[in-house]
Image (tube, rainbow, N blue to C red):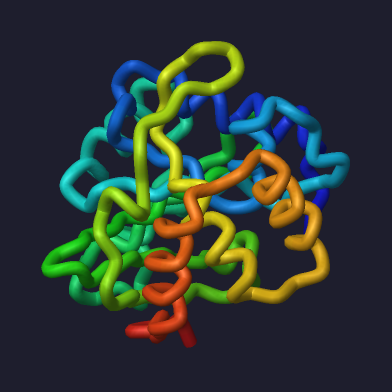
Length: 209
């Protein structure tokens, strides 16, 4: 349920994006991303703020959360009972009353593997999810870019955000896609990314009882 105002979601996103310890490690993704890029207001509420992070940078993410007093073991995939192998499926945190997720990814040989988890405390059940995408280069997935306030931050490429929005075909995504189209994007990169996203598969390696 989308209950977080755009202003609150943006403030939480920028708190992460502007953290020196997470520079080049956390990449904003999802519906709020094009609005952060453009500096405009989405005009709607959001349910959470999503980040991707290199799998090898997840210790730095957790260290930052702990240093900021934001870490909650109950929202850490490593602590889920269903995660018997203790594979990192990311961590969630409440930042200024906004739910924020950090999902680890790896890209090897052009294949993306991104993990995420949901927790009973906000989803009603515990589960681990793995998304795989073939033919995706890291440079087409995440990048460092300058925002309207001249800060340099990590973002999913605007082409990757558009491809994910087109793939989900949700009503709420139409405004986000329209904002991306207004901003403009690289047509060649988008063609590559959209072809890769068409191969996406999502599996649930484990779930709670």
